[in-house]
Image 1: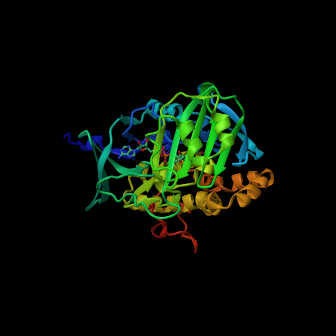
Image 2: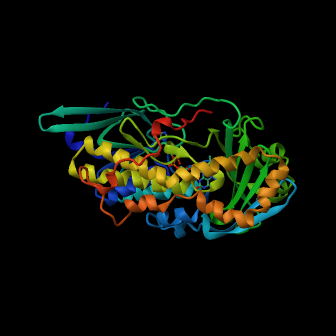
Image 3: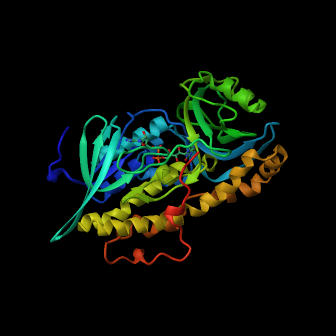
Length: 427
Ligand SMILES: Cc1cc2nc3c(=O)[nH]c(=O)nc-3n(C[C@H](O)[C@H](O)[C@H](O)COP(=O)(O)OP(=O)(O)OC[C@H]3O[C@@H](n4cnc5c(N)ncnc54)[C@H](O)[C@@H]3O)c2cc1C
């Protein structure tokens, strides 16, 4: 085991190197913070995701990476296809892109490294612990980290951006209980070549799930589904994704669409998947991206929320870390983050929860909602997006919150959410 000299104590530790973690590290570097980021996987790697980048994510991404250099597919329409083959769609108010997570996550990770973040790849974090010491000259706070490989690190603040499920000794994470209806979802995906190109994201829905097709770079397609466990127990063992999804969905139009294609990647799967609002902080650590809550994949905005919340988490910490006013400043930053995150995504969760019920609705109801999509779709899309008014308050050009004197730290308004009362992910 290594030991840490006090000179090596950084400003910020980030656990998890997906979009949220990379965005947090990049934002920290933008403000001159010393940051290290830890990721258990090695890049590039496949990740279960529809690989649709909403227009909201594009502006955030373009500040970090040369997105167009990866030749993402341009996506201009959203279409919903019923089991009977009826198609209802609408033009996206602003085009999105299709880019594989293999390319995207690696690009963000390398960008963080090139801007001076200390990166630890292929290093699973095993434990984090927080020590607060009070001396005559004030209090200090130190987060220590141990990796599975026996490495150590330390910093004055911690962001956990480890995705939907994580387990870290020293801090309580989400619990995976396999429960009743609505919880036990399985996500799986694979890449296909040989499908006729279109500029639409196609959502094939059926009772108990849906499968999205999105064009991505290199003329390929990503097929990604979310299905209830009553239809399928395990997607990871699936060699032939097209045959598997056709069988469990009974969706002929989907089968026809996939028929000319050939699978060019392995199938990857993740379970359980449960859309749920979680919490913004725990034991003085900020949670970002899916770690703070997982919005239904059909909204196509998870990556945007991950990027925005990762940035926001780093941004609210800048003032107190620069002023060395921890732990008091961190407590205040945690509160600011909690409030801004709620402003940004609270409404999205409420609406997505209502729409989620449609997955189990009778097909006539599914079809009539789909028929209203040309009118309803753009409005629903707008309502499930990250609300910029929240991040603007700590936006690129505004001053970072300074402990002890920031207008952002006004008292919590009545009715604001209480993180302790949020649903913990329990499936
Ligand atoms: C079926 C499905 C379809 C989706 N489709 C879309 C879509 O089309 N568009 C969209 O915008 N969003 C989509 N999403 C949502 C999107 O994938 C997530 O919102 C996004 O990945 C969140 O990013 P993140 O950085 O918070 O988490 P992640 O991307 O999960 O990254 C977390 C990282 O933390 C690492 N990690 C975990 N534990 C540790 C540890 N102990 N030590 C070190 N590292 C650790 C993991 O390896 C991982 O790389 C979809 C999700 C699902 C399940």
